[in-house]
Image 1 (cartoon, rainbow, N blue to C red):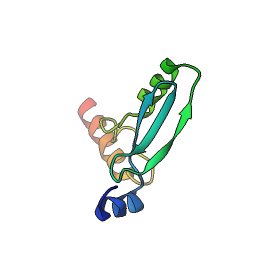
Image 2: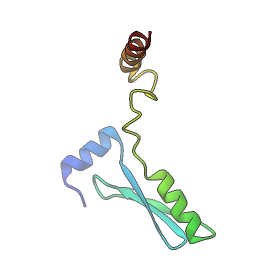
Image 3: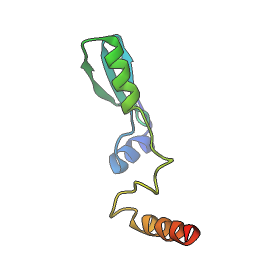
Length: 88
């Protein structure tokens, strides 16, 4: 499906799954390389659509506030220092 650079990126960084619903099923696949992720069936189509919307989010706006402790610790510290300095 995808080119070798997208496949390599998915191998290194992980797949970027996108979720959608079709009837009572929620489906997901990688937006980078096109690899199918899977499917899950729900009792109603509304429930499948609700879960697909909930999982298909990218929290880039909150990246500095809810950053993983180890990976983005410098960003969290800088943000806390800046908020303390501006607020105090």
